[in-house]
Amino acid sequence: MIFGISDLHLSLTQDKPMDIFGENWKDHHLKIAEDWKSRVGDDDLVLIPGDVSWAMKFDDAYKDLEFIANLPGKKVIIKGNHDLWWSSVSKLRELKLSGMYFIQNDSIEYEGISICGSRGWLIPEDGELSEDDEKIYKRELLRLESSLKSAVCDRKIVLLHHPPMGKDGKISKFIDIMEKYGVERCVYGHLHNRFDNRTFIDGKIGNIEFNLLSCDYLNFGLLKLL
Image (cartoon, rainbow, N blue to C red; front, side):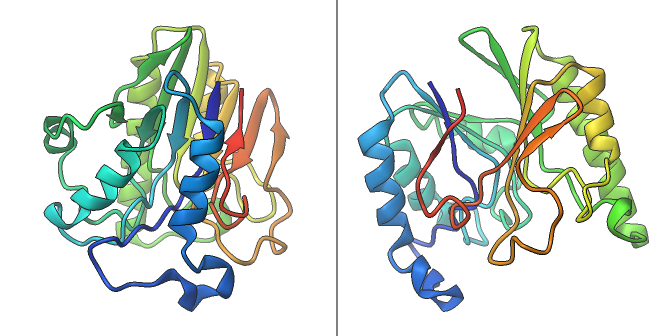
C-alpha cells in the first residue's frame, strides 16, 4: 500500500513547539506516529512531500530524520521550502537511513510505479514573480522533468511541495509537464490553516488525481493513496 503525509515540521532537537499555530498542533509528532504505526506495514510506502524539519543545519535535522526512519515502511522524501538543512542530496543518501529515499532529479520504483518529484515553487498563475522567484520556478520545472524522464514505469506518481495549481484552480506548467509524461497522481503540501480560500485542493484535473497531504489538513493521520 501507498500512504502519504506532508509538512511534519519536526523539531526534536530544537525548542520550536508547533502549538503556537493552534492547539491542534500540540504533540503533533506523537499523533502522527501513533496513526502511522497502527496502519503502515514494513513493505508499505509513505510519501512525504517536504517540510520535514525546522532545523537550519544538516546535523540538527538528523534526529528528525531518524524519527521518521524508525517508523514502519519505506519513505520517499522531497525538499520543502522550509527544509533549509537540505543542502546536498548526496550527503543525505550517505546517511544510509534504513528505508529512506530522497528524490532530486531522479525517481525510484515501487511495485511497478515510478515515484518522481521536485519541490515546485510559486507560480505565475497566482501573480507576477520576482526575478529571483522566476529563476527558481524555471529551475524547478526542469527538475520535475528530469525526474519524470528518469522514470522506468508506465504508472507514475509525483511529489511536489508547493501546490501546482493556482488559488483559483488555474493550471500551471507543472501540471502541463505531468500531463505530458502521463502522471496518474500528484501529492503536495505547503498549505496550512486556511483551506477555504482556494477553489481547488483535492480531486482531478485532466487525467491527474491531486491530493493535499499537509498533516494538519489530514488531522495528523496518513492518507491512504493506493
